[in-house]
Image (cartoon, rainbow, N blue to C red; front, side):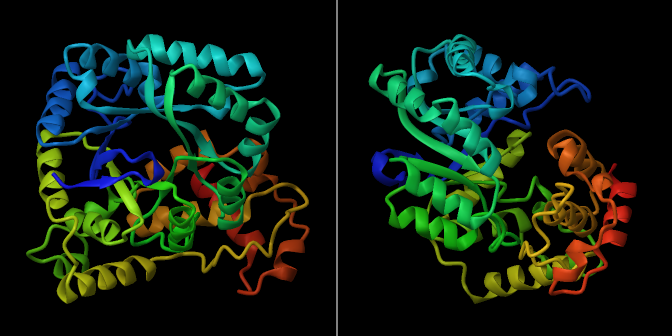
Length: 372
């Protein structure tokens, strides 16, 4: 396993990290972790050199933390760096910060968390965290020795990312990044900005929830013939020197072993053949974009609060990766009700400012029919 420094923390982190949000489950109930299978998976990852384990308060309905607490107490705790997160959805007053953190320590059966993040920060949650004293909370826990290093995970646009990076002395950040998301959310410019500031960069969704691991599809199978698309996508992320660790939500031991083999080559250049295959795969997906939205945000703010670019991003994801079920779940569970497409009243303000000439009203209606 290759290791890299995590920014100013000085920690040696494995190039591959294990994201514990998609552990094997019993049936379709995400709260029922298949503990023998999940335990074998985590132990195999550690055997192969993975030392970065990432979890969060809501993963598997809270069972991810409890499972890791039981597993790590059996001699593994000191062999790994444990990352956990403060969930903004459940923080409504300052006392919630202390309560949730205490629950996390209890669930994890530990007295410290190595890497602690404010979870899923966007402009709205950033404002909430600031108002409720989350930064002061992080400082307090760091002084108490309960947290070693602090960071944030991010889901918004580049200007918001820069604002957050500049607002506090962070040790690291976690961003969505893959060969389809070079200019989405923080993007390439964002990871470079963070690295220049001394932050370690942790990458989530390097395979877009596993969708970039697929090799089937008319035209796509020819592109990847003889090449593992998952390994190619991971190596593309590792080819960016700003990246310290790449998180993968692996659900089978075979996936751990395959991704670990890819990590062994994480310091090697892609080479012209693999670069060309990635370029062709990217173009294959982009040809399946349904709404030609460039996320310029000229349509915002919508008078009714509709998050137009986000909705079009979801529609395009569903169409590109032919995974409407997963995207519907993201729309219904994680898109606030006041930002959804059905709030559109067809006032037309957005269409007047859209440089792409998109019939936004019509596309929002289609989006809500498909996702709502």
